[in-house]
Image (tube, rainbow, N blue to C red; front, side, top):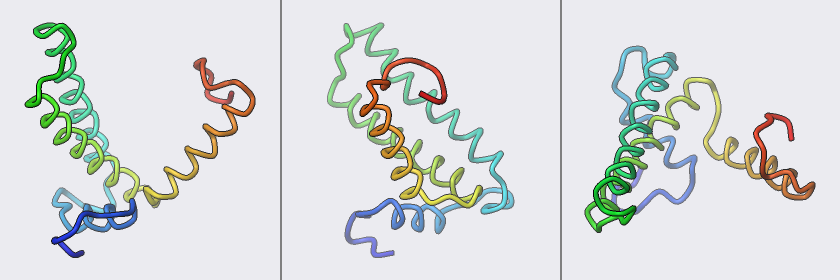
Amino acid sequence: MNESRPYTTFDEYQEGAEETAIYPNAGHNVDYPLRCLSEEVGELCSIFNKAERDNNNVLTPEDILKVQKEAGDVLWELSEVCRNTGLSLSNVAYTNMIKLQHRKKFGKLGGSEDER
């Protein structure tokens, strides 16, 4: 992957993530990145919790930089969860948009059932 430019597709990103994956049985171990994904989502939530508690829900410029870094960590772990289960991020994103467009068409974006 060319380090002088940003990744422009999910597939490029996923390839780059794979190149930096160093954990037990990488590529064949969904448990490790899945647990790490949970940790990273918690760290992302913590930024917003602290902004709510300490700054009336206002993110400072420093907070926004932290969000960018933690969201990147979430994306990296999600990429590895997908890779370890044989899924491409681009296909996951495409499938999700098809599902959401279908729900929107039938006025079912809200709610909590799995199959709306």
